[in-house]
Length: 472
Image 1 (cartoon, helix red, strand yellow):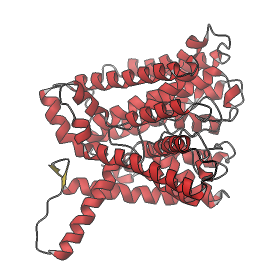
Image 2 (cartoon, helix red, strand yellow):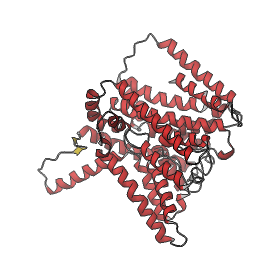
Image 3 (tube, rainbow, N blue to C red):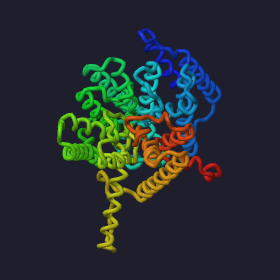
Image 4 (cartoon, rainbow, N blue to C red):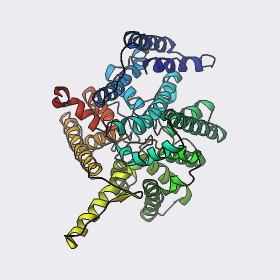
């Protein structure tokens, strides 16, 4: 992974070498690539003859440590650049990139060096494919995360249509690259210059949200906003279902319960908020533009992408509250999106219905079914544990940020957006019209840890930090 990361570190300088702007931070990228590559090669040479029996305990350590170290390495080009970026800012930006969160400490993006802008987008693109691989291959093995619920279904079709995990990995990579190329070309043909199209194409499919302007996507046409909405939705759907479609299992995407609920939310909530905005301020109201803006921003928050076309926190009390709760939702399991994931809300409704029915029929026997399959008690216990630890971490991070003299809205929405990997928070400081630059360094370190925990489904980090893990 280190060697691969070092190769990608050279791309900003190579891509921009012949352009008018050039690559002003080529030395920083070269030094960073050399450091990371040297450590990677050293690791390979010192361990290539060692046995590679990956037990669950080793995989927990490998998963958590690799994301932490790669986030640290990803910040090197920012830190070594000539802009005097502090360690806290560099690590925050690198972590936000590799976790596809989209929160930024930088302002003045319109005049920022293009090689740094390109590196931010490449980071999010790498983080997106890394997240898909982790959710499909690693976390089910560790018995953590939403893909456990789909493990039986996945093993059934992989045994028949894709007999090797290598084939699945190739399929996922092909779909991811294909969607990225289509997004870049579509943006370019719709009026973006090639640089903007390339950056936004990478960050749309990765549901990352890094943009090349302080206005985010607000400077583009309604057509581009609609295209971005489509690509954000694509990035938030289960990628393994796209691979199944490729191998002849048609319509499995729309038969999936989490996909149907996810699309229902994106169809109903923007429409209701558009009607509310018209009802509150009918004068000079442009129905089409306001619906596109509402749909785009709601999709950006639900998919945890983090783009913004307007300051939606200024739309009124109801939209403000709606966006806060939408930050919890997230996309589908097996996608690049963060959040609590759609399936956890569906399982909660199943449990609620079961408990209500037990009050009416105490001696009845109930079966829990999801996507036509029985849901085990182990899955339910895991979901409840995740929800509890998520809320506990939300409380803890909010208290820590409040202790640093941040106001309640900033502290709470900052904690929430880091754990759900949404990007912008709410309020005047870290809202869609602001950034995380004004926060104290201590808050940036705390939020960086929150972004990593949210990306790793929290439980993976908690178990590695527990004393019992190391005593076993």
